[in-house]
Length: 336
Image 1 (cartoon, rainbow, N blue to C red):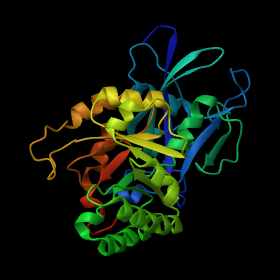
Image 2 (cartoon, rainbow, N blue to C red):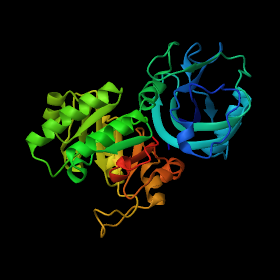
Image 3 (cartoon, rainbow, N blue to C red):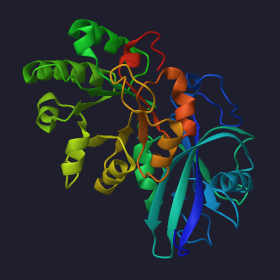
Image 4 (cartoon, rainbow, N blue to C red):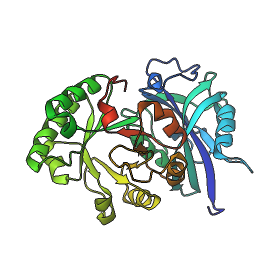
């Protein structure tokens, strides 16, 4: 990275609606930490560039520091807290009039102490969908959108389960918190896909969940779905982002992730991370390669392939936004 780019560590303090936000300690199960509906913003004090703007807390790396070391130091200096658990997330480069910054974002899910403005800055707990403060620093606006994505991205399995059984499983999962679904049924005809998509969208929307249709943009419009999930062939051929509220893509290597970032897609799924039943002879990435491929992504990356609910925190520790699963999404217990 060029010396004219300032490296910055940024922390997203995530908290449930019910938490008191004065002391959050590590949970034994990731499901107990979600949904993390609130996050902390701080207001830049007078005398600093862009004073009065709201941002996520953090600061510049000092000589020899890693982003994680800088994050721990900065959040202690700014907020008086000690980080217990933080996961690497996104990396975004943004050009301001006064500087170009490379922002290393971390999701902070556990800390000790009550956050307070040690530099006399204002603090405010906010939710992604309904901000009550402004203006927000321009570099953070895409982050607010990414925070709307849940930790689980479920892939439909009606072909194997049967449509009626699948719809029962979908309703049960939605009742227990599922909020993002991809309709992907390679074995169904276009007519049956349309019928299934209409049912899935209607049910999911009644719970406030989003639905993406695999590959078929026309079907997105026909079904009233929220967006499209491009396959890797479509991603390679795509020249501009589809004009839809939400756009995702399947990726299998770093070049495809880079392409999705260039197109400004909302998120991607990277696979296969581990061995899968459907592709027993395929080489899997493994977690270290997954982390390497995703370390500079500016958009969230879900991990897919041979994964179970218990892999969530492992995925987070390697830079994943969450898990994408097929069969496991519809198997009890539905603890989303």
